[in-house]
Amino acid sequence: MFEKWDRSRSILISSLIGFILLSWYYMLFVMQMNMSPVAQWQSLDLFMLFVMWSIMMAGMMLPSATPVFLFINKINEQRRRDNRTYSSSLFFVVGYLLTWVFYSFIITLVQWGLHHLTLLSPMMKSNNSLFTALLLISAGLYQFTSLKQACLSLCQSPLGFITSQWREGAVGTIIMGFKHGVTCLGCCWVLMSLLFVIGVMNIKWILVLTLLVLIEKVFAKGELFSRCLGGGLIISGGLILII
Amino acid sequence: MTDQNWQLHMHQIESCNCSHGCGCQFSGYPDSKAGSCEAMLGFSIIKGHLDDVDVSGLKMVLATMWPKAIHEGNGKGVLFIDNSATEAQVNALATIMSGKAGGMPVEAIASTFSEFDGPIQADISMDTDDKRPSFSIKDVLEVQHTPLMNPISGEEQNVHISYPEGGFFWNDAFIGTTSTMHVNHGNICFDHTGNFAAKAITTWPC
Image (cartoon, rainbow over all chains, first blue to last red; front, side, top):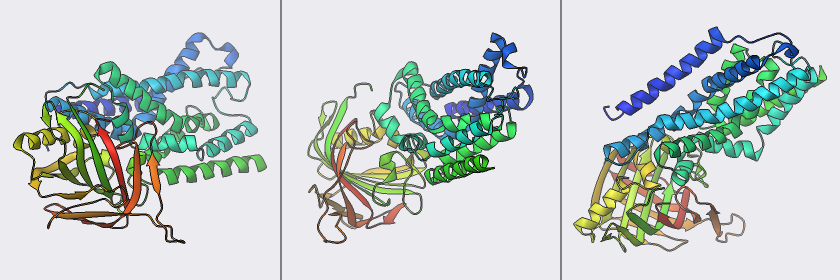
């Protein structure tokens, strides 16, 4: 038992829980955006939107990446016990989060553009049913692409990635975390853009998306689930087109 | 990757309880019915060393059981080393295989064990034929690979899995199946036939 709850593992787990709880606290109680028309936005509003996306992504993506973080920690813990060089697994978490900060930056600009095209209402929700349908259908189709499935499999289990891409030191660990984050990004970026359909700040759907990503990544039949999800998205997009 | 003070260039005879195309080799989850990974690996070292200890020509067998995917941990394993190995050679191989000398993939694999037995010295017989490799330790374990057969013509299939940029254990392997694969050693006990089998020449650290 002592080995299972060594110090670095406790630090990692408590930091992750702390970080996840903080981001959910922010989403539940703090998150508030400028809902006035985009023409009245100031650069601070855009920056706050970027901060919101970043925190939202951290809260949504960290839970499903936890098994990988624990594995990285285990390897480094073993190195520490053997008196060899090791790095804190928290550097890996930092690298992983950097990927999602990068995504948040891009999607903030995309959202800004969508507001200008009036595809999104000031409530940050799609107000164009054709746009909604196309987004749902493309997200559904993406689930079936080989890129999505390859990223999903890399994102699920880090073994092949770790054995071929291991790097030393703090910077190396951050780079590894970033690269792992990129595979998860390849897996989830379209799903996350579905927040435009249901409202960027809709907490219920943020939770639903978090759970969907968790099921895809942490359960053994995740790839089957991801295809069912894809089918469901295509059908709902189709229904919106017809109705 | 830091420079390691060891290298093993060896025949690797690998089989597990996954169906053909072991999910773990593709970085995903085991595709065995139980969702577990139960595997045996036979190694015949063509050329290898740890510091100045030469381990060329030695054989070893690793038998392992993980309840779920390998990276989720809680694995059990046992390492058998050739009877002909000297004490220094046994120590060298045990140091490498326990991950204590660093280097992939052993370092990652070693961190997933919660129980490990050995090294145990034993008489290991091993045949490193590419299509019909085998290894055994009397009264403990036995593995025999056979080629995959074309179900219609009954001809032997020549199947390879290749990772041009470097795989998890090897870069290119002959793929077959098992006609025998069982082990009975304390907690490590299983019997699987007709599942995934691969024969490769590999160089670690990868």
